[in-house]
Image (cartoon, rainbow, N blue to C red; front, side):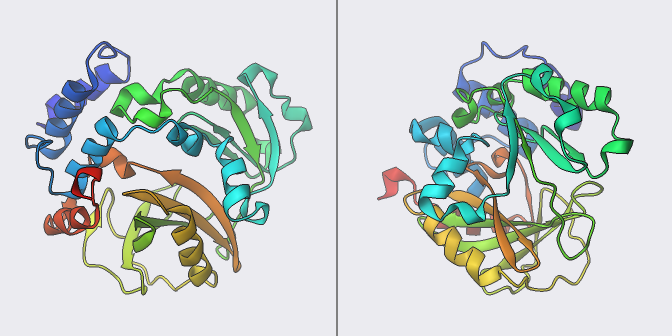
Amino acid sequence: MKFFRRVFMFFARRNFFDWMPDELYVRLCYKCHMGKKLNLKNPQTFNEKLQWLKLYDRKPEYTRLVDKYAVREHIKEKIGEEYLIPLIGVWDRVEDIDFDKLPNQFVLKCTHDSGGLVICNDKSTLDIEEAKKTLQHFYKREYYYIQREWPYKNVPHRIIAEKYMVDESGTQLKDYKFFCFDGEPKAVQIVTDRTVSKRSDFFDINFNRLPFARGSNNSGKEIKKPQGYDEMVRLAKVLSQGFAHIRVDFYDVNGKVYFGELTFFSNSGFSKFHPDKYDKIFGDWIKLPTDK
């Protein structure tokens, strides 16, 4: 199965399956990643319900919410501009970026993609040509076709530059990813070592560690409750109102909370829980529109 998954995803990333209807493609992906058939008639688990939402819950406003530039206006309207990481610039093409005018530290992101970014903490050591190649690769990528996450399909291709931020570690930011269900945050995933091993740990909303892993190994570290945790919970409730499920991500910079992103399909719904029973526990929290 691992070999089949590698082969399938190799061709998927090269647009060989763009012609394939979404439901068939999602079923094949689910079989590749999860090792079992996808139940769309009566989905029970978290991963199954995310596939159902991909295919059947398609509201035009979702496109704005996954657009890394357009979502800034949504955040300003909902919780306030003070929660946005300062914006340095926005460009329609990679060729338009004038690196000479950028500050010594910055983060470049493609607005229509997931994972397409360049982190610069010292411009004097940055390989600018390599940075441009990285951005061009992600700029050209049609992220929707890889996992069929519908909201990304019509996001304009742009690049933004944001202020480079670090937390108390002095070297990087931790991601605080709140799993929310109809306006109720139920769990938080804390991602550490983002640029190296990308370890993560799960906690319930009262900050008690949960005994499972998903998508990556646990860090094995003691993780302290951040200063802005209660504020993040409050903001997650505001931003997740009206969605059967959405993940709301934040950063904490010495007690100052910043918005990260909104995600409808965490790990695209193709990531196993260990132990497996948590797939069903999280799934029970999603009330699909057909259940209401």
